Length: 139
Image 1 (cartoon, helix red, strand yellow):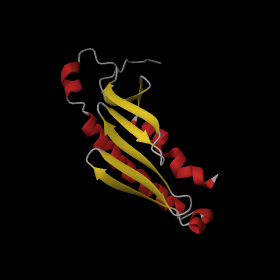
Image 2 (image 1 turned 90 degrees about the vertical axis):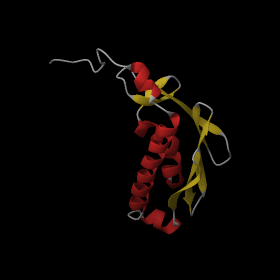
Image 3 (image 1 turned 120 degrees about the vertical axis):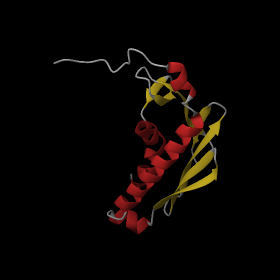
Image 4 (image 1 turned 45 degrees about the horizontal axis):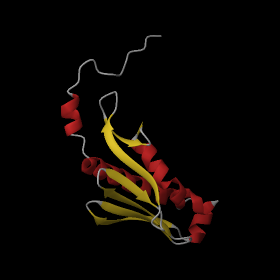
């Protein structure tokens, strides 16, 4: 089996990095979370326990640098996403920071979030931030 490196042989890394901005990544993250919320709400309609608890998820914008994902109904809670300096900070309903991400370009030349020094895909960051909010109330 032949393996080809996904690392470009030549890349304008300065240009790519200059175009890799936290505000753009934040907007993409928000848009994808809206999709996650729609999927989760649809799945909840199929769950008798969730129907009984009248659980629903919504996203509310604070401004262009912050938004909140709310769990409404039983066991109300939230997760906040806020740009603070060069980082994305994710906080629980009590305001405790539980996730912090920066941005950079991966070895493959893609703009990505970084958590604890490791590049993460957008879905991985969404999972880290929202899994407990989306699924923790049904345990």
